[in-house]
Structure formats: structure tokens, C-alpha cells
Amino acid sequence: MKRGSSDIVIRNKKASHDYEFLDKYIAGIKLTGTEIKSIRLGKAALVDSYCLFRDGELYLKGMHISEYYWGNLNNHDPLRERKLLLNKKELRKIERKVKETGYTIIALKVFMNERGLAKAEIAVSKGKKEYDKRQTIKKKDVDREMDRFRKK
Image (cartoon, rainbow, N blue to C red; front, top):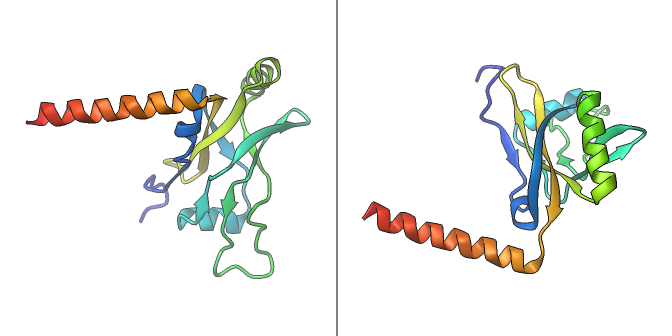
């Protein structure tokens, strides 16, 4: 497996069910040595993770990265907050949307880019109501039925 392989993708499958995505961004993640090794092994989860602003910087909270098996006493805390790396223009734009309209920032997936760096895809999103969730499920069922008829 070469260093820049992009076959490692950790997804937040529940996010598209609970939220409607408005804007998507790709951000770098500031990680320690044992964290990146665990991610390369696919030992991470994005369930219930979200982003928040602190002192003008964006942090990813709730992402679980399992401790590295071969790590020693210097192993990382699995649930620590991780800083997201975006340029200042994007940070100001996202922060304005979150403060003015009350939107939420959700982590959609974590992946490795071609240079072997961990990146997170985040989205400024709005929570779905119960009837929106039912409507989404109904639309998926209809699309699935249409695909079945097209294949016949």
C-alpha cells in the first residue's frame, strides 16, 4: 500500500439522515503521530461528531480515534478535540453563518488525500424535521423502484 492511498474513508452515515447540507468544505486536521496511524488503519468513528468555534478557530469534537495498538505511554486521548485547518476567509464565512442563522457544522467524512494527509469534509447544515426525514426516505424508495424498472 503506497503512502498516498485514498482508500481509507470514515463516513458519518447518520448525518445525511438528520441534517440538510447547505455548504461543504474540505479541512485539514491537526493530529498527533499515533492518531494518524490509527486513522490509516481505519480505527476512527464520526458518530455524534460536530464542529465548534473557540477563539476564532474551528475544532472537531466527538470524533473517536481508537488508541494505536502499538503505541506506548505517549498514546493519544481517543475523544480529544482536534483543530481543523481552514483559511481565515473560509473560517469567517462559516462562523458568520453559524452565528446569524443558527446552523450546525457537521463532519461528513474523514479521508486521506493523495499526499497521505488526513482531511475532513465538513458541512454547514440545518437539522431536518421529522416530516423532512420521512420525505427523504420516501424519495429514496421511489428512486430505488425507478432503478429496478429501468434495469428490466
